[in-house]
Amino acid sequence: MAKPAQILTLHVSIDDVAPPVWRRIQVDGDITLRNLHHIFQASFGWTSSHLHQFDIEDDTYAMLDNEYVLDLTEAPDQGPFDDRKARLGRLVYPGQRFIYLYDFGDSWTHTVHIESISEASEKLGYATVVDGAGACPPEDIGGPPGYINFLDTIERSPRSQEAREMLDWAGGDFDANVFDKRAANAALLRMAVNGWGKK
Image (cartoon, rainbow, N blue to C red; front, top):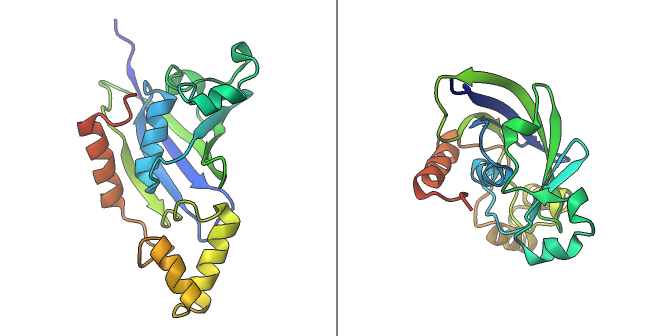
């Protein structure tokens, strides 16, 4: 008899930013952590331009197919472990929290809370953003401190040269409170259809 599929509901929030930026996502428990990385990228609006890692309990899972990460690995048998080989549903339990770190320079720390794990008659097949809040910070803005400075500048003096340059850097208009669930799910669907994240 086949083992029932697992559907995990995750609450993922970016630490140290205001207004809050978070997503509630449902995923199949059989996905790898590398797939989860791509799901987080699409759900938040990141561009997958930087390294990432997961810290779950006492273990680190990283991009061991990247030369830079391999250079940092001192004892491969003690970690970090390959995020392409680790299955989410085998590592977590309801109520657990773990860390997803994106961009080692800007250090965007995401706290992941496993809200629930339920059985399903078949695999989910793709991820779904159920809810969320807040716009994804611009890439390479300087992490949470840079993002706070960015928001302060565009709110305090939106017509200043500095604010215009920052908005150009961010791609134009920016509203920190905007979250588009439909766009997030469209990005996830494109990922599923195109097979992005299967590496």
